[in-house]
Image 1 (spheres, rainbow, N blue to C red):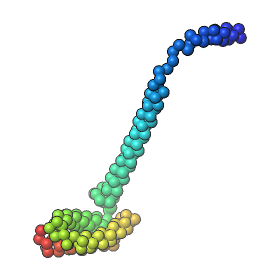
Image 2: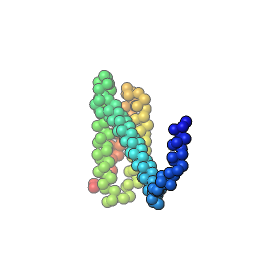
Image 3: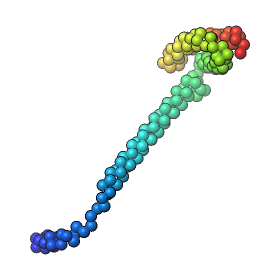
Image 4: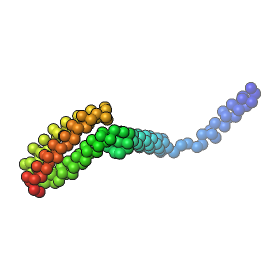
Length: 169
């Protein structure tokens, strides 16, 4: 106790000597600015982390869906040769339709009046095709659905062939 009293007495007697150093007037402004910059850095870092997670999840999902439904990896699990052939045929027609459709779209500037009709018809067929594709995701071994998808693509192919023949672009 006596040591505490001596320390306390020393502090009281030398109080003015302790108060010789005062902070600069801009110190609090500098502290606020540093705090604000630190918050901004933390927010940016958090946003970058969230964006990275979203990117990784998106890419992973795309690769998973792609490998299951559209590449040989997904077909490797299918043992029925007829079903594999149907899926390959469906992929073939879908690819042909997309190639010819891109040719038609290049001609829209030359023939603007066909754009609405062609796009409207193709959108209807595409909507039906997507419904069939969703049905196929539920059961990959559903032959009637695959056959309907092939028929849809054949019809779309006939449509785009007919349009290309008429416009001769």
